[in-house]
Length: 129
Image 1: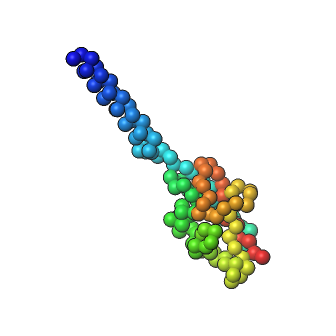
Image 2: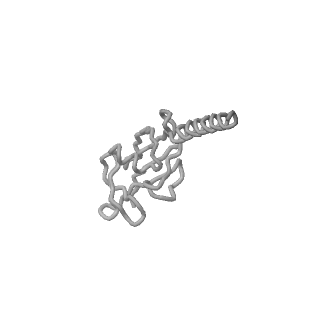
Image 3: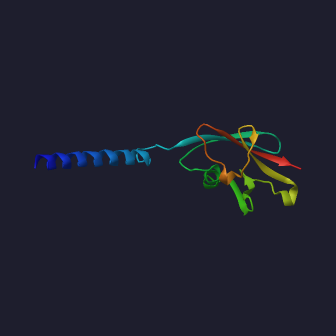
């Protein structure tokens, strides 16, 4: 009987420990999983404006869309940015576009699939042909 009670107590303790770890891993402890990043917008006249975001989102694009900073259309390679901070650039209309940079490097993917990395700086640069 004592072995059964000891076994049950050990099982309850083990389950409690697992439940606490699962809660911690899912971000239920306040701001766990929050990432902070900087976005620099470089306008046509080469002036810059800096924005800072904190998010649990996986990708940069949805954060900027939810904040109302960017607008665009779905294209064959993801979101085609048409407006940044109210400034329009549509290549088919005016030969200009919004280039996406990760740090100082041209991004290898679209804004909607650019991962949010804590502490990283991204840029949206107005570029004309």
